[in-house]
Image (tube, rainbow, N blue to C red; front, side):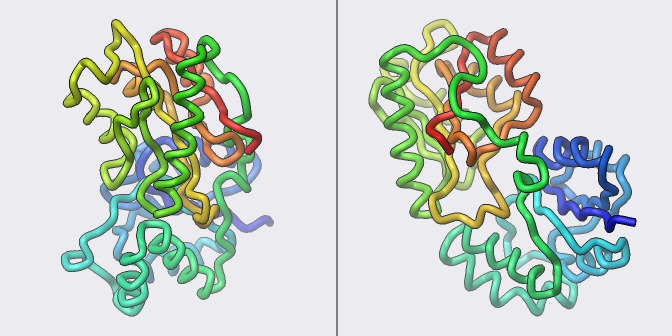
Length: 277
């Protein structure tokens, strides 16, 4: 019998989409991280644990027979002072704190290497389900006109710059002006901030301007935390008055693809894969 795949599930739609795609062909064991994982994952074999229970997560995965694991979903950076750790977690804490000083990607990479050192084969969600990766070209909505296309080009350039500094994976550009950069608040938080800007520089649902661009950090560990969009991203972008969303083809993932296409059409925004991946 083939060993089950272990999914360490944070928040958002990616863990659910991944589990739904894998389940027909592979058995799964899902670690649901408390306070983050979608309750829908409770229908799969697995266990709920806190993010500080690193030893508990490893023990549960081993007991289930998992050798190959995938990290999927969003988890907020913890407060290391108040984080409740088990014995293994405490032993890993110095390495995690040291890595965290260099940014989120360094922290996540250090976490991955802890699991690798314990004999787990950590793979990216896109390795297991390559169909989640964005294709190049128009995905939904009408093709962007000249100004929006220019904003997409600039947005991709800016997103790569902040990604190289391990700041975030996205930005918003309107008429050549950078309106927002993604940091610890995440994409949805960044989009909410747009409403605080003057109407002179931002769009509205009645008069759309600008684009959201998301791309992978140039040097990031591709086994974890690739950019993801879903139907909620499209809704939030439309409510923020944007014309559309550009994501890096081959390096960003789309969950609920049919819902993304439907919502984009309904709300009058475009979604496009940028570059060749």
